[in-house]
Image (cartoon, rainbow, N blue to C red; front, side, top):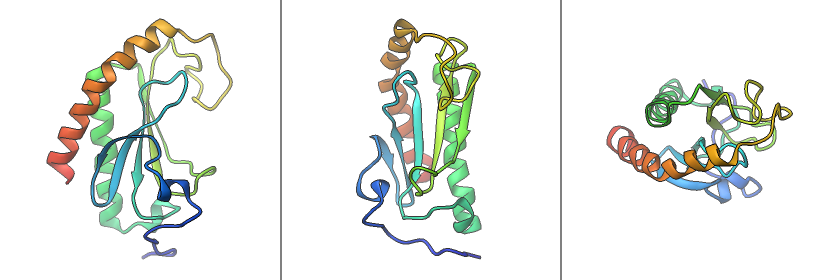
Length: 152
């Protein structure tokens, strides 16, 4: 079932040593952080706590649990911020520690419709970014409440 067993932590891994961003919620198996990604204010990561590189390294039950959390985060971001789209990604090329990106996107963002890692399509809209940023503390509180209620 596990081709590569999970390790509690890896000393060389930044996501084993640090939260990886502003901690929104931590459960026994995973945590949610809000990343500081310039130009993308509503950029969250669901990070598996134990050191594991690939999604398929998790047990079936852990994979289901992880995706339920990702879906809950996506749903609350959609309800609270009303973005044009949510981008979900699990790359791990730079940091080989399992984490899912949950990124709210708008037609006006500097890279839309391209991925956030592509070249910018237009200039940033600081006013609109600030308006989204102002709503994030309330969203973080909702996320914390829901994740604690459903996944603690």
